[in-house]
Image (cartoon, rainbow, N blue to C red; front, side, top):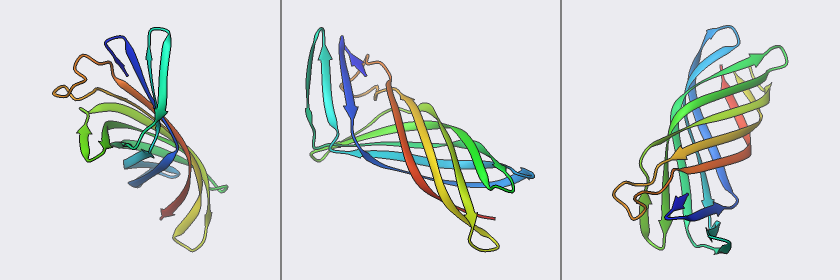
Length: 163
């Protein structure tokens, strides 16, 4: 995010998850409604102004929440899938009891994985997911005139499918 010529960076490890509810429109093609999110706890923060950079650890929690629609395609009989979703995105920052929300932006999710049937109806597996969001700051907050905050998150997930 850039505010008045200064660039703010936030990076750190965290958790990622998602939930989708969908239906098969043709064999192997699933349309779904998605909720996905990522949260970084105590991320590293850097501020770059001109040629100087100041950085350090924070005590904040940064969360990005996404809601949208997507599609997944299963390659059978291997039960491998690829998918993606487009979504509305919002960010929340909790820092020392102070909570700040952004306005709503946009984003997308890409994922792929492999599942194994563990019963007639349940498949369990592993997946990789990449999430991108471009979120405007809160127009009523202190970051007026700031550029959009772009977030990128990647993670490995457990997956479960009920069919």
